[in-house]
Length: 313
Image (tube, rainbow, N blue to C red; front, side, top):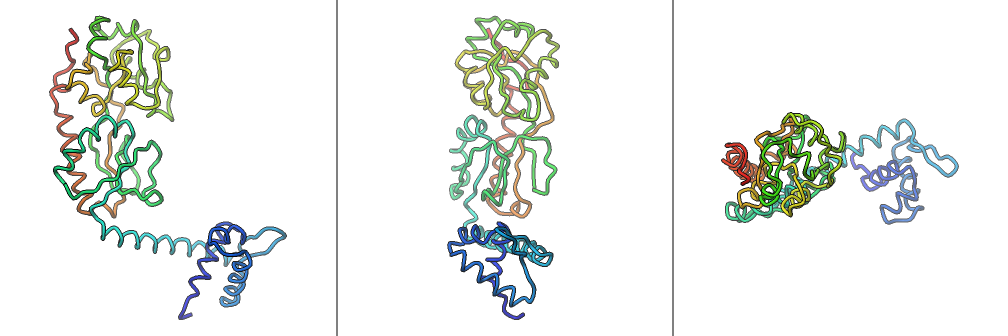
């Protein structure tokens, strides 16, 4: 078979996906009759049936199922190669998926430094809490908050994720916060965005246990589905929130927040740089990773977090 009937094979692959000539016609923007005719011509060319035609429905023959599976893989491989070739033409354009709270509180304030360092880099930011599908969503790199990644993608830890109470200086002074036991007398602000597969108050419960505090119920406080909202409520003097280093470091440095206690809860999570393994050698992927490592290194070595609690008086 020197010349494969590619158009007809494409029509078959779409029809096999839907098990419907009508739906295949809608996707291909042709008539149902055209799809049916192409499938008949392909079956005649191949010398075997691809579909079993039932009353008002289709099913694949065993040979049809084998061919459909191979075509799906082959078309995906072709699409990937094309995207790779296109990426080589525009290797200075990167689409970055990032957690919304991290984008708001950490990345956006530092974009000027990134542009100064790499003025030719065109960064496209997609803020999302959803699971990243690099190929479907055309994402080049992502910053995730997770345990160490065990998938097939390339990953590198950027910063250990630790949480600790923060509040506004005025709130700390008004409440006279000196010991963690006093948290029973204040409003706790909870970020439950990271705990879809755990209890909503797991972080507060973990930190309170670490600090040896008993009798405090985080459920009496206000919960938010984004970390930056809990931090903003703390800045507004609405209570005590659990802060993460990248989400609160700027606010602490600029005096909008204080860290009343020294204990930091480590649940084993990291901020991870993740990308498909075949993307990791791209020049601007490497440059972005280098810049992120440098910025996170500065945060992790900050004296605000190396020397323990911030004075509240």
